[in-house]
Structures are given as structure tokens and as C-alpha cells.
Image (cartoon, rainbow, N blue to C red; front, side, top):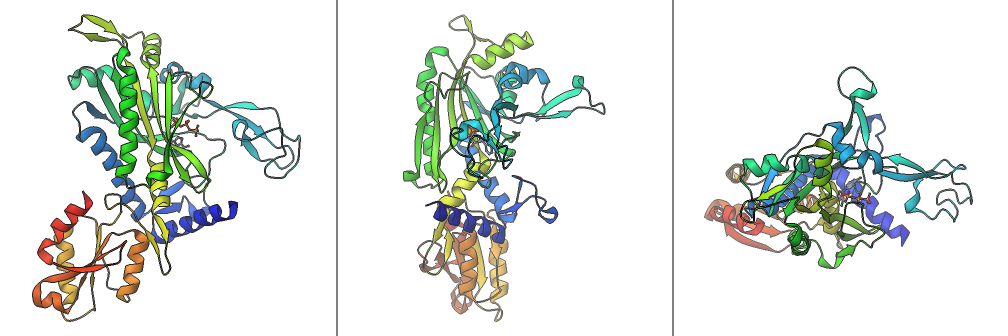
Length: 434
Ligand code: ATP
């Protein structure tokens, strides 16, 4: 079991590097632990995931507005949020082999999982996960700032700004995509847990007596989104946090989990944060964070329902879910909307005007779709390269194309081919991708 899971991940990591999805950061210097770069295909895919999230959370509704807050914030924010005091993980070291673990992720009454020795663990020490740096030239405590460990706080502190500017009444939400940083003790499983990552978070402000209704709504809505990404529904499930798992601010929490080769793990958290966040910012800033309902003539702190997902983790999920080994090929079966390249155009041979016609088709598609032109090697080999990139459709220009203005279109998953008119390519792609 352990072997096959490692094998799948190894093969995926190697494909991701070979095809230009993901590279180790600073590779020419030997790499830096848990940092990764997205290559030409990876960056397209990540952009698609962010766009699909934004579309579902902002464009398809009228009660959610966008925000892009800065990564560095006033240090008081992190006191109010509880991160300075409580954003810690218990860390233990093995005195024998010097390996480091999160105490809550291993059984310290058993031998060390790395060297097998018993009773070699240090006492647990609490380790704050926030990255610290200094603002301005003086490295002194008055100038300490933190790299945000979540994007959510940028939303809470802008509650009134967004509400007033966008003229919102309850319930309404604020959505944000951005980088977050956590000095994780044990990063790993490729891009599953890294120290720098991107989050897609939405905070939905509701009347306190409507929290449960909206919590249920967002729980469902977010699960639907993963189905829209084309993920195998059998590998998705909810995990409800028990009383002892709940974060200090949460009244209820559900994770959406995916079955990775290394087991079931969280991809998204949906939390009922109550009025904790606005209450704390009210207390620490001295500003009134309440909402005034001018119809009911009531003033109160809204409750917050949060949906929080890692963009990198979603991308990893899509890669794993798409990875398929068939008899003669490896193919990435991405949903067309997620696929980094939507279509490839090939001339069957490099003569008789075929490259010219293929390039004309490519030029007509550019601007609407990410497309790829390839004339190198046999058509079979070109198909295989596109299979590994997960390109859903390949159009081939052949002799008949020059005669009657049609091309073959080959479907990535079924490998079946049909002929369509060159004039119809755009509408064909539009229909398949949406
Ligand atoms: P864990 O308990 O596994 O450390 P968490 O419960 O603290 O995670 P949240 O704070 O709820 O995670 O973060 C919301 C989402 O952000 C997660 O579901 C995940 O998709 C993403 N995320 C969190 N930490 C990381 C990380 N270190 N690397 C990549 N993505 C992350």
C-alpha cells in the first residue's frame, strides 16, 4: 500500500516537472524545502482554478464582493485574531535522529517513525507558525510585522469599508484570493502542505439567528463546486469537527476532504466563526464593528460563515484526480475548464500548405483560448504529449482540410475522431469548455 501510494506520487511529480506544471524552487541551487514554482502549464491551470472559484463565488451572484488586501497588516490585527498567542503547533524532536514532528500528528508513546527508537522524544514545545519580519531598516521589536497566515483578517478589518462602498445589507460576503504564509513544522506531500501558499477565502456576514441556515447553504454550495471541477465524487466527503477539534472561534466546522494517495485529507474548511472576529476587532481597535439594521432598528455584531480553500491544494487534487494510466499512454483527464491548454492544432505533415492553414486556425483561436501549435514528430507522438498535458481536444489539418475546410477533432478521453468544419471550431470549444 505504502509503495503504491509513493509510486503514484513519484510518477505524478515527475510528469508535472517534465511537462512544466510544477518545478522545485531554486532547483539549480539544490532547491529549497517545500517551495515550488508553477511552470507554463501549472500557471495556466492555477489561473483557471482561481477564475472558476471567482466566477462561482462572485460573478454568479449579487451578494458577494471582491477584495485584495495587503499581505502585511498592522501587528495589532494578529493580536486581535488570536494568532500571536495561539497560532502554534506543538513540536517534538527525536533526540536520536534529530527528526522533527508535530506532536499531534504522531504517537509519542511509540518508537520514532524515522529511526525506530523509543523514548527519544523531547518535551513538546509550542511553535508559532507566523513568519516574522521587520518593517523599515531597523530590526527592533517595535518594527515587527508578520506575513499573513490567512487572508481572512484582511476581510474582517474591511467589513465596513466594503459594506459602505458596495452598499450592502446583510447577508453579504467578501471574497479574496491571495498568498498566505505559515512556518509549518512538517511541510510535505509535495504541494499539499507548503510554507507559502495561496488561499481562496470568502467570509459571509449574516444575522446571528440565521447562521445555521447559511452554514448549511455554504456547505452544500462548496461541495457542488468540486463536482463542477470534475472531481470523482466518490473521493470527496465531509468531515465534521468534533467538539475537541473545533478552533477557539468556531461554533461548527466541516472540512471537505479528498482521498489522496496518502489518505483522506482536508481541501477546504467551512466554519461558523460566530461574532468572534468582529468582536475581537471591536475590542482591539476600539471601532464599532456592529451592523445597524435600519428596518428592525437593531445594532448587532454579524456572525460569519467562512469558506476557506487552498488554491495549490485544489490544483494538487485536480492533478491527482486527472492522472490516468492506460495501456499505451498516461493521460491527464482534466475537466476542460481546468485544463491548462484547451486545444492543440497540428498539420498532418509539414508541407502542402498544411502548416499555414493550421497556423491560421491557431491565430483565430488565440485571445479566446490557450491553444498550442505542434508540427514536430508523428501525429501519434503529438497526441501523447497533449495527453500528458491534459489538452482535451486536438485538431488536425490534413489533405481533406485543404479541399473542403474541415479538420479532424480528436477527443482526449475517448481518443475518437470526428470531422468538423473549421468555422465551427470556436463554438465547439466554447460549448465544451463552459
Ligand atoms: P491543518 O490543520 O492541516 O494545518 P488548517 O485546518 O489549519 O490545516 P485552515 O486554516 O482551515 O487549515 O486553512 C484553510 C485551507 O487552506 C486548507 O483547507 C488548505 O486547503 C489551505 N492550507 C492551509 N495550510 C496550508 C499549507 N500549509 N499549504 C497549503 N495549503 C494550506
